[in-house]
Amino acid sequence: MSPTAASASHRAPGSASLLDVRDLRVRFRMVDGTIFAVNGVSLHLDRGETLGLVGESGSGKSVTSLALMRLLPPQPAAEVSGAIVFDGRDISSLPEKQMRSIRGRDIAMVFQDPMTSLNPVLRIGEQVEETIRAHREVDSAGARARAAELLRLVGIADAERQLERYPHEFSGGMRQRVMIAMALALEPKLLIADEPTTALDVTIQAQVLELLKQLTTETGTAVILITHDLGVVARMTRRVAVMYAGKVVESAPTGELFANPKHPYTVGLLHSIPRLDGEVGMLRPIEGSPPDLRTEPMGCPFAPRCAWRLEVCWEQMPDLLPLGSMAGSAPEHLVACHDPVRPPEVELARPDRPGFEPAPPPRALA
Ligand SMILES: Nc1ncnc2c1ncn2[C@@H]1O[C@H](COP(=O)(O)OP(=O)(O)OP(=O)(O)O)[C@@H](O)[C@H]1O
Ligand code: SF4
Ligand SMILES: [Mg+2]
Image 1 (cartoon, rainbow, N blue to C red):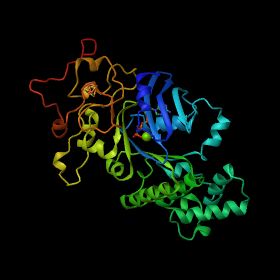
Image 2 (cartoon, rainbow, N blue to C red):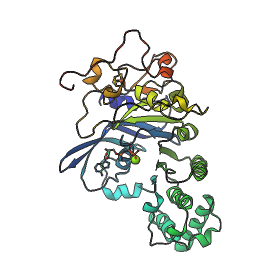
Image 3 (cartoon, rainbow, N blue to C red):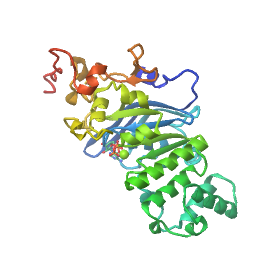
Image 4 (cartoon, protein in one colour):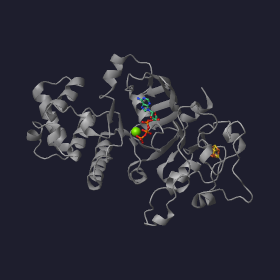
C-alpha cells in the first residue's frame, strides 16, 4: 500500500467504514493524447456520514463519482486503477452483472440535471416503479403503492395523479424530488449527489437540500455531496474533501476545514466566496489558471499558482497525510502539502514570513 493509500484509512478509532477509496486513477485515452482526470484519489466514508466534495470545475469530482459507480462512459475508454472497497469488498473489478445489483440498491446517484436522468417518453410512475421492481420482489400494485408513498415522502402532493404525468409536465424542482425519491427508494447505504440543486433556483435549492438531509438522516444513508457551494457544504456535511487536479488535497471535519484550512488551495477557495457578513470587498479570486490535465502531473499541481511553494513542490507530489502533532488540528485533518498554511496566514492569504519568496520554477519548466 502506498503512503497515500495508507492515509486514506486514517480515521477516528472505532468508526465503521462504508467506503474506502485508495489511490483511484482515471485516464482517458483520446486520439490526440491522454487526459489525466483523476490522479490518486483516496477517501473514506463512514456509515451514515455526509462528505462534501468540493473543487473547481474540471478537478475530477464527477469522474471520481462515476468511477465509484462504475458508470464511466464507454467512449473514450477510461483506464481506471485503484481500490474501491465498499461495505467490506473491493468492487473495482466486480463483473458488471453484480455491479448492477449494487447500483440502485446499495449505491444510488442523483445528478445535476434531472431532465437528462429521467426518460422523457415514460410516465413518472413507470420510472419510479421500474426502479423499485428492478431490485425488490413486489407485484405491480405493490410497486405502485410504494411509488406513491415515495412521491408523498418527497413532498409531492396528489401523488397518485402525479404518477400519471410525464417529466416535461414537472417543474425542475419536482423532477429533482422525483430523482431523490428514486435514489432513496431502496434505502441505499450510499447516495452520491453530484450538484443536485445547481439547476434549480435558490429557494427551491434550499428546500430540496433540506429534504435530502432529512431523508438520508432518517434512512441512515451516507452521502457524498458534490457541490461548488461552500455554504451548502457548511450546512449539509460533517466532513469535506477538497479536490484539485484530480486529487484530494485536504480533508477535514467541516468546521475544522473552515476554521483552520491548511492547504493553500483551500485558503484560496475560502477567500473566493462571498463572506456571510456581506463584505464582498474581501473577495479574492485564485490567481492563475487551472492545471492542464493533458500532461501527467509532476510535483504539486498547484505549484504554479501557490504563494507558499518551495523548491520541492515543483518535483514531488506531497502525500495526503494526517497533520498529526500540528497544534490545534483535528485528528481527521489530512493535507497534501509540503508547506501547510499557518493560522495567521489564513486571513492574509499569503505566507507571513519575512523575506519569503515562492520558489521559481526549475529551468526545465520556466
Ligand atoms: N468522458 C470524458 N472523456 C474525456 N475527458 C473527460 C470525460 N469526462 C470528464 N473528462 C475530463 O476529466 C476532467 C475532470 O472532469 P470532471 O467532470 O470530473 O470535473 P468536475 O470536477 O466534475 O467539474 P465540474 O465542477 O465542472 O462538474 C476534465 O478535464 C474533463 O474535461
Ligand atoms: S506549498 Fe507546495 S505542496 Fe503545498 S500547495 Fe503550495 S506548491 Fe503545493
Ligand atoms: Mg462535475
